[in-house]
Structure formats: structure tokens, C-alpha cells
Image (cartoon, rainbow, N blue to C red):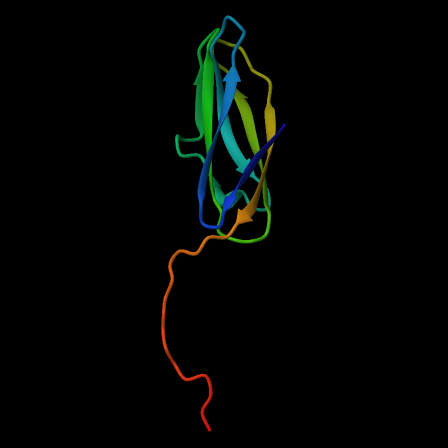
Amino acid sequence: NTIEFSGALHATIVKQVVLTNPSNYTLAYNVILVGRDAHDFSLPKGNTVTIPAGRQGFVNVEFTIRFLHPAEAVLLLISNKVDGIDGATMTFSLKAEVKSIEPLGIIRCRSPCYEL
């Protein structure tokens, strides 16, 4: 699965990954960001998630668009044993791109264009 982050330059975008646990056991995951631009993505709610039996868990991924080039990383969820049960390892592709450029401010100045 691919999670796409797109927006204006310098914008911060947060995406939420919803994980469902259909089993009768609690599942826990370590969340890791890997790849070329992994340092540009962050996990504001920490790098662990616990999903109670029959419930949902959420992983928030945050990205601030700092450069014009597209960014890529991989979101990796590795299971921890809880109640003696291991969950499946999951991976998500993260892709980010600039859709627009908005000025942060306007500076007006006067100066001569040409002097002899």
C-alpha cells in the first residue's frame, strides 16, 4: 500500500494509518521509518502501537515538505509478542511531492536598476 503526502512547500501533512485487529488477542507493533528520506518523516505519537483484541489502532505519520524533489520512505510495522501471539509484519510505501508553492511573505524594496 502507498500513502501519499502532497501539498504546498513548507506545509506539514499528517496521515493516519488505521490498523484493525480481528483476533482475540492483543497485538503490539514497533513502528520504524526506513529509506532515502526517512529522516523527513516522523511519528508524533511514538514508535509503538498496541491494538486490543477486536479493536483498531492508529499510527500517525507526519511529513513537512522542505524540498522541491519528491520524497520516499517505507513505514515498517514489526510485531512484538503479546499474549504469546505474533502479528504479521506490515509495510507501507510513503511518497511525498510538492503540489504548489505559496510565498511565506512579500518584501518590497526600491533600488536603482542601472548606474553608469
